[in-house]
Length: 269
Ligand code: IPT
Image 1: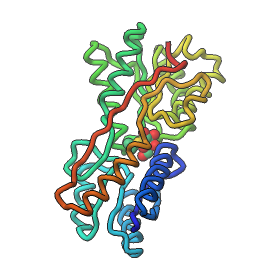
Image 2 (image 1 turned 60 degrees about the horizontal axis):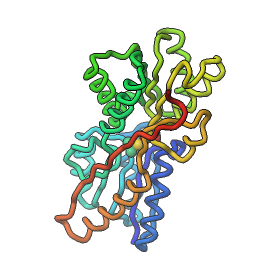
Image 3 (image 1 turned 30 degrees about the horizontal axis):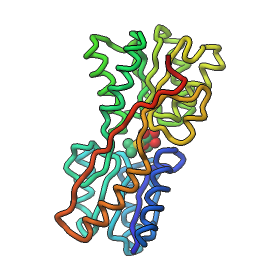
Image 4 (image 1 turned 135 degrees about the vertical axis):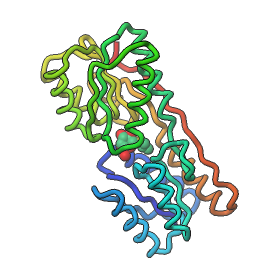
């Protein structure tokens, strides 16, 4: 009657929305949710969090922490007394997971901007340690290459607004020749919009910006953010449903890949 959620920082909007969804759908199925939040040192802290949940007799755990496939597989092997379902791994990894397709929304973003006439792209990806940040970046690059384009610059932030703010100021200093900026998530895009506004750079007049996640707030950014929408509520719902089904029937460990869709608002043109 209790399931566990190990999550990356809930100061980040996407994981906090996933946690809310997990709790809602678990409660609806008469389960309580115990949440353990990891700190900076992911690999060490993850096992501590799992142990913490085990000590409370939790044996079904959703893990929303960015993990390389090999690390996720090791976690499964070293914790064979519990059932783990992962939310932030490569969708094609062998572990039980519910994750998002990293290629469809990224491809749609590049295609949309290309069709609007953009040829100079800058990429501001999420952190280098994040599997999903890297898969999104790879898909942007592959799609640009399919149009025979190379980005004018590639840089990384750490998912928060401050890093987007700093990142775009650095771009303006070092490689200002771009008309389109693809950003790894909405929070970094929020910082980007703020910095561009302060510098008097018109969005989308001079630079078009696309975010990623479509967390609730992005429709209220100024201008309203064009972004790649992840249905985080659905991810929470599917995770709970698949975890509970698998705990009843062992053969039912079926993973699922959810789509990501471009939502065009006012930050692009
Ligand atoms: C991913 C978000 O896209 C990103 O904004 C950030 O919050 C990150 O999570 C935190 O780890 S979504 C994840 C399920 C790939």
